[in-house]
Image 1 (cartoon, helix red, strand yellow):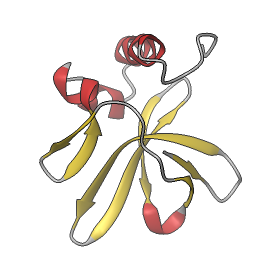
Image 2 (spheres, rainbow, N blue to C red):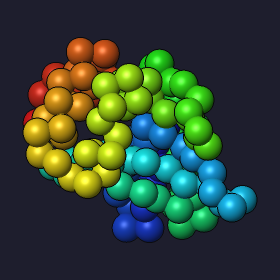
Image 3 (cartoon, rainbow, N blue to C red):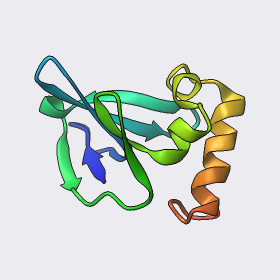
Length: 100
């Protein structure tokens, strides 16, 4: 899934979750990790979610985020976890091999 910010930046989405009737996305921000995007403030460019996703608590998450317990560290911008997540994405064909 891809979303577009108001400035035109395209973001790959690796989770969708719901809180109090609102929809949020976790999108990959290069050189950081995962950031939260309010669905009301971005546009959905590509609604297709490819890869292995699972339902967890109140959302649908890219399975390695949960299986490897890296979600919280990615949201906090931990560089070591970011590097590991990029390795996972490359191995699963989710991003180009030359992405960082």
